[in-house]
Length: 270
Image (cartoon, rainbow, N blue to C red):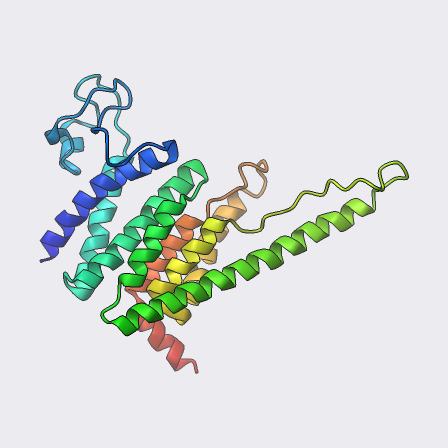
């Protein structure tokens, strides 16, 4: 059963690579055969065997010998491991499949956010959809929906409050430098403290983890991101823009796998 889950994850991971590459370029993920991005030659079926093809081709295109990115086998392997871990936790069931697919969408979002600093709404909506359906009863689905809406609303409110505070701070600082000739001009930029993509990811986390565990995952994601933030602190403004979705996704998966001991620790501290 675990071997079947791992192989199934590898197959989904192979398709996930297509999603990661094509969605940011507004290309169809359904139509158009897989091809080499260097020589544009269509690939044969045996060129698309997860991990194995990359190894036998030695990481190069069989037509033009262009280098094939390590992203392909890494995403396939991670997808296989996600399916393997979820199957080990719940066995191969339909709800477990939806949960694994939700984490795969978070993996795709993480890669796209890391490479392009963008979070496609289509993948975000799929992640939420799969997370809500990852329940074993109708009541569980309704509870997942409730938690998703709760954290989406909470993050929206947090975004508004932080953006207002940051924009107001810059406005007050700018007012001190006003002169008689520019006092009627206000060019204070509106500072976005959080992207809309992060709000939707929070909704997915709420549906997957519930209230208590989502709060733990958010705290853990901040801890994971802290060393990276410290490393880029002295770099340019553009380089300081650290994608946060990968940390949210990683923290969510860690908390989901270790949910029982985390909940036991939370209950023990009351």
